[in-house]
Image 1: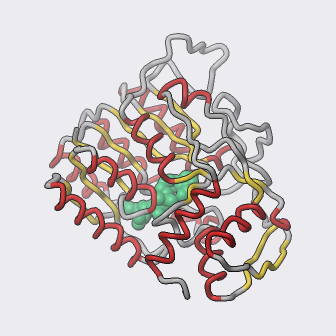
Image 2: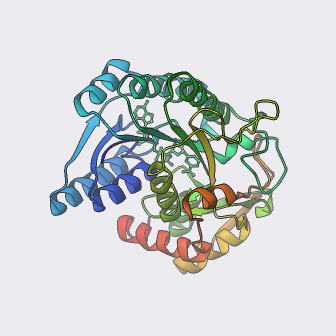
Length: 342
Ligand SMILES: NC(=O)c1ccc[n+]([C@@H]2O[C@H](COP(=O)([O-])OP(=O)(O)OC[C@H]3O[C@@H](n4cnc5c(N)ncnc54)[C@H](O)[C@@H]3O)[C@@H](O)[C@H]2O)c1
């Protein structure tokens, strides 16, 4: 299997590429290594992939280019003839989308169009791409189900991800391109993203600096461990979307279609209070946090929880890593990577 993994210098893409190389797939990575966060961490992930591929004698290549550069995207597809594409490159981050909305249009809308076009013209057998739990937005019906509406996004980030799902549907319908969108729920773990809470909390706790705890730590998140996400990504990618023969145009189910199109939640389905997440981190680091209590931030969602019935039905799998175990593994990685005084 020859697989393109976009965003493989990023948190999730790195882990997915690593697993695919380990199981013997031929992997090509694609990433522009932007400076949304420390590019040195991205380079360190790429070095890990290089070393793994060397050890295994695996066929692995990497292209540094921008998704918005359609000539660069077309060239990679024409050179390689991919069986599957796992598209994880994007401008991520909710808060940043309030400050730099254009970054999201370029990477997530223009970039996604270029991926769709390249898949269409190169007969890719399956496009699997990252969406987000944030698409549920103002929908407060928990657990979030793919069968419910997701048409009230609360930030531009979420709106671009929801747009990706709709754009994918049009390509599945018009060109028969099998597409699967994956709504990830707050992913954490080793090699994580420095802009996310666990990472910033760890850095500040180790430096003896106060951490900002919004909403008194009372909101809940369906924190999902990275290995569970990787398992879900690979299992869904291995099963190209097919048309749903039961799909009824008079009562249209948003999660499937008469076209080869699917949407799945991938979340732990066990929401955890932010305050308890911090307790687990304090225990894993053996240090107490200085907590500065703050009100809820504009655009923040109170609670998230995934219904993963459909993921389990399609792949026989559901995320299950307990939060405390995942946080312990993150803390171990962090202190071995950065040392325990940073
Ligand atoms: N981490 C989470 O909790 C989470 C939750 C929901 C959805 N997601 C989605 O999962 C995917 C992976 O997220 P992540 O946490 O690994 O983020 P990440 O920022 O670590 O990785 C994204 C990678 O994409 C690359 N990239 C960005 N714009 C690009 C462009 N225009 N051209 C080429 N490369 C570009 C970046 O350099 C980065 O290495 C994203 O689509 C994100 O929106 C992540």
